Length: 407
Image (tube, rainbow, N blue to C red; front, side, top):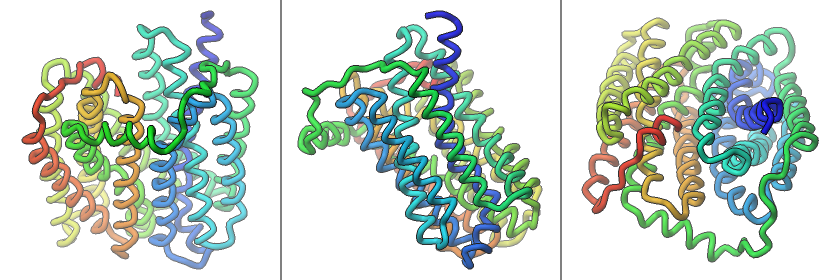
């Protein structure tokens, strides 16, 4: 493979990977403007984020079998097409219900991009280069939450909020053109692959019978809910509560993302010295302590904007260390059914994330209390699930340090 072709493939796969995070984060600074336009509250607008998470959870389970049955590019065309149509629908949304529904379909479409990108890395690159390529894609994935809300904040300040969805539509069209003309088909369709519910459900059931998978996948999903609680309620906390401008919010969001990204990179260093199980235990205990203090402070009005940012930063650092290790340990038992396990893992994270964002919407307060309450509850549940679940694991399979570092 020539250097030019390698670079083109990385750029296209990186763009596919970044589409989901951009779709989640770019419109966050526009929550207040959307609420004003649709004659509702920012708490209700947050439900459009919940529907997006539900769409991603559904899409994770949908695209795995489709990519194996029809090849990589055809499902990718369908998904990007659905994304483009849904994004334009969001642009023309005239009611909250319409926006919530279209965000669901937008998420289902974006799932094709992320799932296909991961599969095509395995198809297009030698096995010995996979970790390197995944690291590049993860860097893109990590940088997206820093860039997207900042871009969204400037768009919202200069134009109407609908322009954000127009920009997302244009980005998706450009990605689709790149896929059509420059991305090769990496996997031939397999007519023998069954799309009948029975075999697919059978693979899922096999995965769910493994105690190690259930313990670390569900425990990790609840830990990951702390990140979703932050994403869904940050516009309410900072724009509504602390009255920061859209531009200021974009920079705060970008700065807090450094905590998550930095700790995940620190994890790749620490994992060379400590086991994943140790890292999970330490990060969850610390997360429970920080989120509980955050909850107590929110109830008693201890924290201003600086203290609130510090508490969120601490929780995100814990998530950044815990998440790669729970993902690696949950997938470690599977040499077969790894695709089904990955699909359930991603779906469980998004499903719990949707529940956490719905919880934020239910607690109708323009303060840090809803965020802190969800963070504290989810971290305590995560610690209990991992602590109790470990007792049911008979033959624990360790994850290699390289795998954990690459997640």
